Amino acid sequence: MKPSCEDTWSLATCVDTTATMVAAARAAASRQANPIINDPFAEALVVASGAELFGRLASGDLEFADIGTDWLVDFFAARTRFFDGFFTGALASGIRQAVIVGSGLDSRSYRLEFPSGTVVYEIDRPDVVAFKNCTLTRLGATPNADLRPVGVELSQDWPRALQRVGFDPAEPTAWLTEWLMVACLPADARKRLLERITTLSARGSQLTADHLPNDKHSDVEQFLRTGGWRTADRTLEDLLRDDELSAHTMDIGPNAHGAIRYLTATRK
Image (tube, rainbow, N blue to C red; front, side):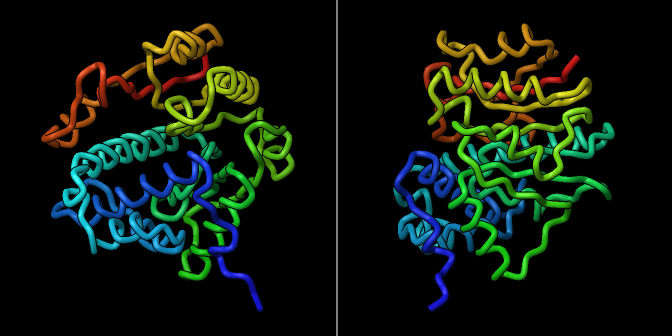
């Protein structure tokens, strides 16, 4: 019997649980009146994961408000809008290769518009990549760019795997490292990831990340500046104001959700 897409997926790790929860929030945000994001693939990916609670939240059978976490919908909608906008700006500047590191259930390659000739590389564990590709293929979805998945652990030699499928370090790149600098990766792994990205980044490359600037063990912004990047930082309050969203029950203080900053950087 032919294996199902679900046979490749497990919620055994922090990364998988987070990816599924975030996708469920994107699905809920996409159902709102006058939504600020539109992710038509999030619900199907979450339901296919087999995670019952997240599946009910993604489909609307259960609302985030029903479990006391209604703030998550606007929180992840604002974040998604910010990172989507990063790609829009980077590609408008002429960049034609993008790398999504730790892509999880991200469907940007399918739902965003990319200029002709854009190549998007998605890096994640082989099982995550296989599950997403299988599920989206069964939906009949096609990417809006030349999508090249790279199934490899971040602890392994992913730069070599990336270059094997066509990545050119001599060309400027748009890098997305959503959530990796906040959770799941320890400080030494974050530093190693940024070192590798910097080595692969030609002049004019751009990067975006969410991070915790008060984390003394991993000052992402300082590391990038030292490595030859020009940086800019935004707060959660900035993101909510840009999208005309209210914080409601969201704690945007410096000791809660507001502790996370949203960084963009350009390689000098």
